[in-house]
Length: 341
Image (tube, rainbow, N blue to C red; front, side):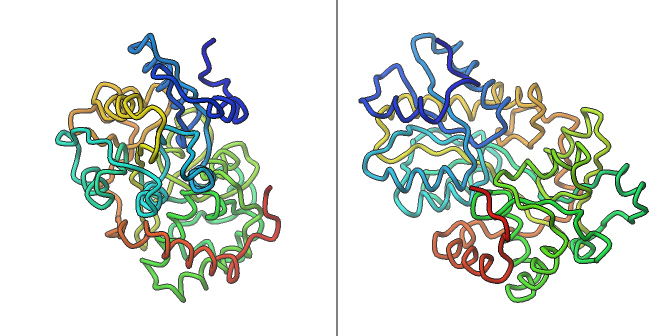
């Protein structure tokens, strides 16, 4: 039975209840579902004797699961999602070095491996941005945002949707970006002001832009490649690189410490870093910039060189201590009045 796109968390837990065989890999994917499915299908097509048990979870949920299962992991490899939680898992000894060759990767991807001592390797990059539904803002005669500061304006009351940084790597990247751009105290002041205009905090980082595309909210915060994908599908969504500058993610892949199928997990990492495999991401509408220097970059992919990117400090904001402190202050100073279970 082929499991990609169909496997549930319960199936993955059942698979982990018994010792994994050499021809079975348990993967948690933190990218978009279609891309997860493509990766599983492509891997199984090349490795016909191997079954991939895959489930999609956000980075925050995955980090929590890995922590809970430390010493008796049900997962072999974690693929996709923002790099900060991957670095935290590496710091806490929850992942291990795969020993794969990274010489074909771009500098920012190799930097991820260097910071984590080979435990987390960069697979793609994407810039944080704002997006707005042009039809909604035109109908309500609301001037679109150009800067982060615009989102504090009362004209956007009830119009903004963003994810919760406790569950979403995208939203944690936003939190860390604000702290690096504005300083910690001002960052929380701004986030609290924006929070007065937020109609909902979602679990998933890509959910707000999907909601904006469907006309369920006027403005979203997320990654630009997700916004570009939605616009390419015909939705009236316009992506904006904030005038003050913005942060970015380096998505990562990590092998879990104590993985029951280390060789299979290593094979997955090698597969995920290949140029031909990374070049297939646009087939699923995934327009991140690939990490392999020989991979094809889709014309729809945002040009990172044209965006005012901050010098994002992955070492600092990918540490357990920093993340815990920032999230605790977010809960107290900003908070989600209606947290999703």
